[in-house]
Length: 234
Image 1 (cartoon, rainbow, N blue to C red):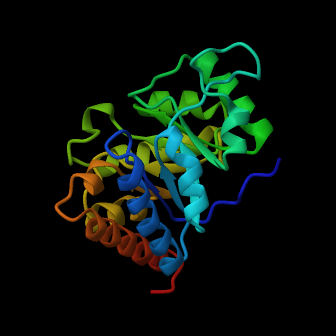
Image 2 (image 1 turned 135 degrees about the vertical axis):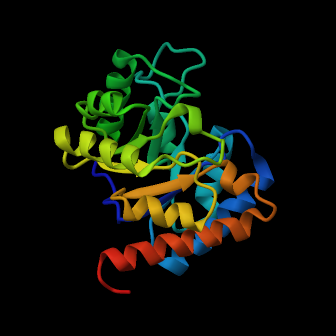
């Protein structure tokens, strides 16, 4: 199956397990409106049971699972079946997040299964060396973020962003790079894109903000600004 072509710069709203049910849907609907307003691709993750509802209630989001296993229909109690995600309208999946790590073998199988079903793969890595190694599996998107900065509000340094961008592109030029560690405001979003990242995103910077909706809009506005400057439209 063909995968969606991703427009750059893109944004990921990743509530992890902070939100579920009605709260997750409320944020998804707001992100959906912002995706239309700014004309950008927005990936939205949620708990597995919430994904079909979010798919049904939104029009512009790239519905994203937070994990998937590289299994086929049959035995696999408790694992996440790729076909089930595809049937639920899922178009992308996170793999190997520091909060849900995978072995190289597990990761390779999951990427292969996602490719078979046309599911966009978003694979996480920590160091520049790990980013280069994982990039050899040719995922669609690489998330490069130092694990120690996740959820801290402290962003990756410019040197880290540039070195991981280069590490990924050196072995997998078509893989897009997302820089997202510690993103908590529009300034962080702008800096990440201007450093050469293809996309960025946030979790605690949105869900833990005093006004999550205002925080998300500030980030999306900054993403739009950076994108226009890079394209020479500003």
